[in-house]
Length: 194
Image (cartoon, rainbow, N blue to C red; front, side, top):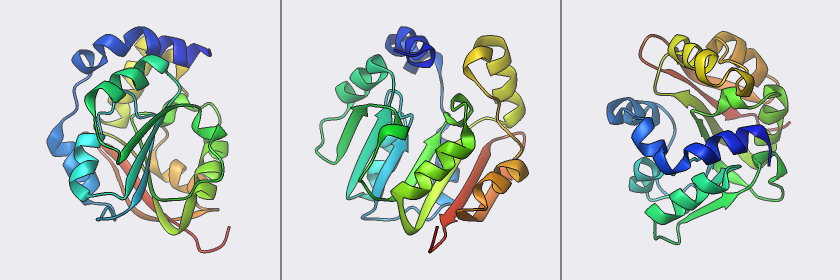
């Protein structure tokens, strides 16, 4: 198991008490994307399944939640008893041969040491015209400050959205971006041809 998986595994049992997620901000993020009924959704770094309660009201065709921490996945599976949600303990970079309409990476992007590799891989998992959302319900400044104190060796830091938009540009067209004192989010549509 790698260091990131080990770190989150040790916190899995208390994660939902340690981390709070502002429903108003999460709803704001989702409402400012193309999320709609009937989509095949990939939740990258799903942790304990925080997002699923926000995604299920959109009546998705299915949600695949992927996380490298066995403890986080076990906790997520204990919360949801629906065939619509499939939680998997895996590295998203190992996911092959599947296709999604909507991919969301909530509170996880800084933990990928090679962001360009992640973006390229996620583009390959999305249908043409599909949407990628990278977001946090806190500001970039707050996220980076927290990671500097608690997870410095496990986090690359969250770049300004303009920098992230540049990383996305070979594969995506950016729809919306927010990088302010409330939250961080970027929504982008996969180009027709890669």
